Image (cartoon, rainbow, N blue to C red; front, side, top):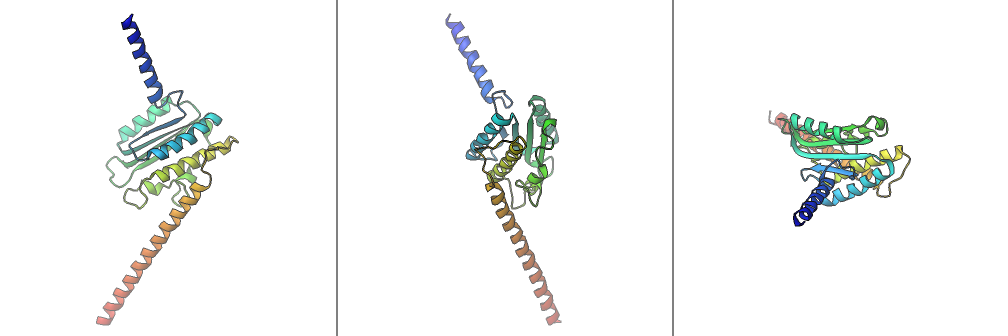
Length: 214
């Protein structure tokens, strides 16, 4: 009897662990797999938003963030999730570096056919207006991956999907994401203009000095 009870408890514990940790469990609304690129506080907020979106629309968003991926690893992750996710879904895969490219990563998003036209990837990844710009995948740029960037991109994505379904998310951070990224973007381009002006000025002064010495 004791053995049967212990076996039953072990089976229950195993079943519970599978429910909690399986990334595509039917009990999961928020799916995240990552290499600690996003801090715990941000993940908690994203879970709050993702859970509410799933409850109101049935849409599941799976986010995978990695430090490095080979082509084989990328395809394995992509195929595994696309096989296990149930429509409607969005799969977002990000890696800081990809294959043998030391300075560039990969940033891909996939969705089930029933979500076609319900959100705009360009508004997320455009280098000029996107809340999560593709410039972030350039390792040597000033815009390395940050928790804030992922939160803003994730929040914008969920807002677009919610609008397409005609619902409002109480957990949404609203226009804060656009405002924050616009401020960063303005500061980034101002710094580029500053250094470009400084470079031109130095070239002009150098040329003027050479002419005087001649």
